[in-house]
Structures are given as C-alpha cells and as structure tokens.
Image 1 (cartoon, helix red, strand yellow):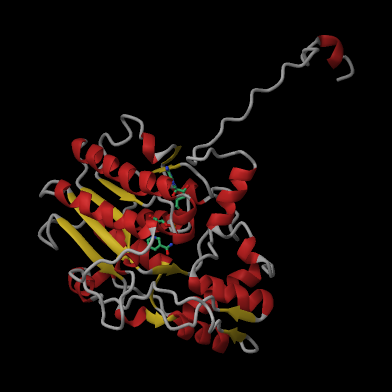
Image 2: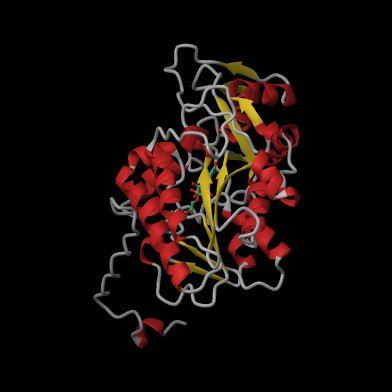
Length: 360
Ligand SMILES: NC(=O)c1ccc[n+]([C@@H]2O[C@H](COP(=O)([O-])OP(=O)(O)OC[C@H]3O[C@@H](n4cnc5c(N)ncnc54)[C@H](O)[C@@H]3O)[C@@H](O)[C@H]2O)c1
C-alpha cells in the first residue's frame, strides 16, 4: 500500500492472471492516493491490514512466493526512526523469511537497494563490490541480505533486487525521490532546487520496471543465478548524476531554472552501478522506460491532478512528513504501531430510545 506496491499488483495480476494475490500492509500511507479513483488493492484477491512484525499464523500457508516490500523506506525516515527501521526492515524481514521457508514458500523476493554501495566514486559497482552503507536505511538492507543468504536453498530461492532510486507515476506517488521532486518543483514553482552540488551519481529505475523485475524474480529457478541471488536491478543507461537529472527536467519543461547549492555539505551517497548481471540473468525483464518519457509522464499526471503546491516538500507526498503528521495526531506510537481509536463515550441518553425516533 505504498509507492511501489500498486504497480507490482497490476503487473502480477497481468502476468499471473490465475494467481491468488494477497496483500499485507500496515497502511501508513494507504490514504495518500494520487490521481486514481480506484483503490489499487481492489486488484488483489485479499488485502489484510497487519504488521510485518506480527505476521498472523496461517497467512503464509499454501503461498508460493512472497514479495517483501514493507519497510521504512528512505534515509530521512531511517534517521528519524533508527531503531524501528532496523526492527521492521531487518529483524521482521528475516523472521518473515524464516516463516515463509517453514511454510514451503518457494521464492522470496526482497526489495533491496543500491544505496548499500554508499560512497562509491566513479567506477561502476558490481554485486561483488565492497558495501559501504552510510545510513540506517542502507544498513538495514545490508543486514537483511546477509541474514537472508543462509536461509536460501534449492527449495527456498531468495532474490534480493538491489534497486536504484525509484521514479515515475504511481497511484501513491512519493515526491521524496530525486526525479519526482525535480519534476514537482518545475511544475509548482518553475524552479528545481538541488540540495547538493549536483555531482553525486544516482542510478534510477521506473517504478513499473521494478514491478517487471519482481515478476521475473517470483518465478526464478535456482538454476538461474543460484538459490541466493543479490543482483543490481536496473539498467546501465539509467546511471545519472543528480545535476544531469535536473537539466533533463529543465529541458523538458522550458522556463525551468535550476538552482545548485554549491555550499551544501557534500552528499556522500554517490554510486554508479553495473547492471550487467541482471541483463544476463533476466533478459526479458529489462527496464523499458526512459528518462524523457518518465519526465513527460510525471509532468502530465501532476498537471492532471491539479498539482501546484510550492510547499510540496513539507506535504503529505513526503513519507517522513506523513509519518510525523500521524505521530503528531497520536495515531501512531513511537514504535510506529497504530493507536486504536479511544472507545466511544457512552451517551447519557441511549440514542435508540423510541421517543427520540418519534418524528422519523
Ligand atoms: N522507492 C525507492 O526509491 C526504492 C528504491 C529501492 C528499494 N526500495 C524498497 O522498495 C520497498 C517499497 O518502497 P516504497 O517506495 O513503496 O515505500 P513506501 O514507503 O511508499 O511503502 C512502504 C510500505 O511498507 C508498509 N510498511 C512499513 N512498515 C510496515 C510494517 N511494520 N508492517 C506492514 N507494512 C509496513 C507501509 O505501510 C507502506 O505501505 C521498500 O522495501 C524500499 O526500501 C524502494
């Protein structure tokens, strides 16, 4: 019920029309719909509200494949909720995989991240390159891959898809992702403000191309990549420097100005990634979207939803902001579980008394 999920549901529904698809999510952002009149989860056979930290017994019985997306899903949230990030992203994910294996699940697909390469320099990172996670979020992904590896065997295949930064339209758009942020800035203010000097490398992937990679991984046999596989999922042509992304948006939306921040502390998260293994193992699940088309799509969809909020960086389209708002409303506890609504006060006069209904 986040940003990536709706595209994954659509893709799996199309690729496996006879499969029974079950969603499981706590629903932090369930209400953050963008430009859709249909709840994306109605494409599932069942949607269950629940916490990955407390998966009900029976949920995994008879299940063939698990696509594990649930997470505290970026660096700012990982910094603000560090312990919870490790608990949800790492410990709960491993417990889920152990239970999946015990229930005879055949394929476990984990949404990992290229951010685990951290400070990378200009040479392209392969799956055997040293990991250098710089944030709690990235550390949670490294720890997850490390502890998933020993669980894998010929009957329980584990695929860790190391995605770059996602971009593109979704039924639950996020604007805290670099390309989405730039297009939103251009649409709302005519300006793109880069929070760094623009030099860091960022591999990107369209959210629907993530879905296609996941569709490949749920059926992957051990003969294609081994029982445990951690693979960079994306394409070489989507390696961009942040500044290049801004320039591409400015070119597509004439009149946009790009503001660099030369005095910003250097953004150490910079990684150029090699996707050749993914090309070899998954030739039919290669990314199809390109940068220009993704910018046009975001631009048109933002216009169609009447988007023009110059303060979008503090809006509910930012995951950290929305979590903070839920905390301020005391809807979520400090460990990010829902607070049940307080009991309804007992009315002094029962509202069903017949004399109150006399005028009906
Ligand atoms: N968006 C990206 O750029 C990107 C890149 C690489 C990897 N990923 C990974 O892909 C996955 C999905 O990312 P997204 O962009 O859709 O994030 P998102 O924040 O939009 O969605 C995350 C979802 O996880 C759910 N969730 C969080 N904690 C939960 C818990 N304890 N129990 C049940 N559900 C819980 C949330 O309710 C939300 O629906 C994440 O694992 C993320 O780390 C995302």
